[in-house]
Length: 338
Ligand code: ASP
Image (cartoon, rainbow, N blue to C red; front, side, top):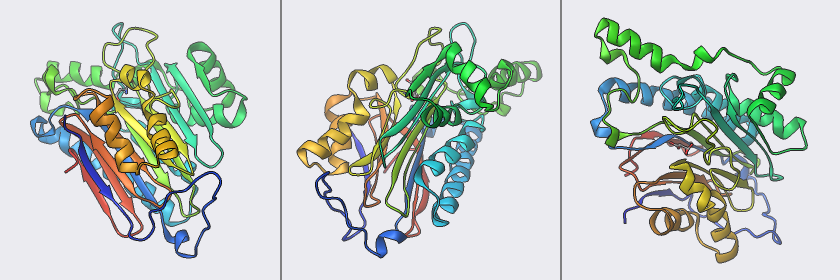
């Protein structure tokens, strides 16, 4: 089984941190920041149309630039995760927010979660149909309620009360509208995503972000329209803390993408943390154990960042859209991690 691995280690800064031994922050620690984002895992990117590749690359680089700027200015990890994911949710090239895939009955039902590694606070929403940026609603759940996860009608009522931006359901139907228009005009090249692919090339484009900020805080978030033609009411791993998202300042911040049912069954995001916590595994080993040994080939991918700013991005699918930047000058985007 193949797990593709990229692990960048900042020399001299990797260390194992336990709950009993809080990390002493040095002067140079405050220079460290790191961010990784993903835009979904799946089929072979070399089979994408040039338009799709270009749109994805532009979207990832744009979101990465925003994250880089905010982190260099000293912004908090959680704020950066929300801002970066909002940017990706507004980009119809990805399966989150505006570009979400549709259920079998033709609705967009959106899921999102985020987690603050500083105090394990977290928030999530599932199955919302009229919220422009589900990641921001998840943050409101975290900040303004005693709960972790709100779903369906209750989440939408909360969204109205919270005054987050609401949209008509047609806002999410950009793919359908574009497809109709393309069919009318015969210009299929204008389709931004997926429509060029055969079913064995699926690469839906869920989005996620993990961050280590200059104060040493970690945060993670994930947002998605779920899987295409899912049953009404189906909820995947993205809004399930411990499955699709997890962050703990002492161990790692993790976001996953792939077949959500498998990520839930295997509690993947928390399993990465548990391997570091209880077995003293490295972050790279904890991630690769999940993708190589626990999840079947073709299931998906993970991005993660450690307390020292080490970024790990791996997938067991042919491709994963992802990008990474850090204070050493790294700034790059991949469709398949080398
Ligand atoms: N994990 C998402 C879900 O199952 C889909 C994806 O990441 O492509 O809802």
